Image (cartoon, rainbow, N blue to C red):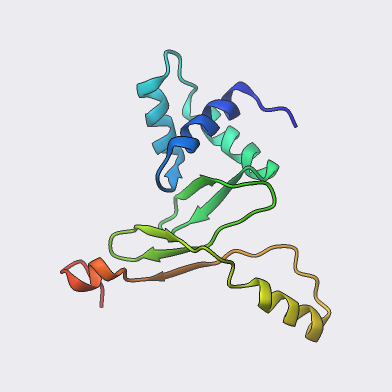
Length: 133
């Protein structure tokens, strides 16, 4: 697997990210740290390539903008997403793997993948005035 220069730069930014990052976030970071940053289109293309290679995971937080995070090949993450502040928490385990076995046993359906994001209100927002009722 050969990475383009753009892919390598996107991975460098994602390696230092503390949270999920949008393409705009990644591009902005590159503009402040690179002498000749790639354009936003290159960032989007690089992210799509990295997702297809299984090095980056795209996450939909329900606001129409995908966020990205690095993953180890073959790994995937699930998140709890706060409707009020949009912060997300990475779940340490996959809640679906056990369900997949039951689906295969009962229906003979071979699951190739899944996506799970759980939406609600975080504890900070439920205590404060940010909570959505």
